[in-house]
Length: 65
Image (cartoon, rainbow, N blue to C red):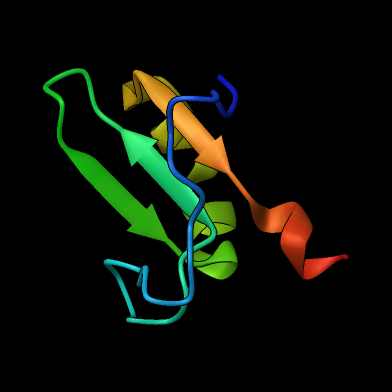
């Protein structure tokens, strides 16, 4: 699952649903809902997120730029 052009870029105002840090990963669920995660929590839960997501927008590469 990869980022698609229809998803707006994540910004500094997008926050992790677990801890409130800046979000770098958006998980779009089959129901249409979405979850946001910081890089730390995205990595910690990635295996399960890959199983339940309809689509994942991963912008963690911004951290290495």
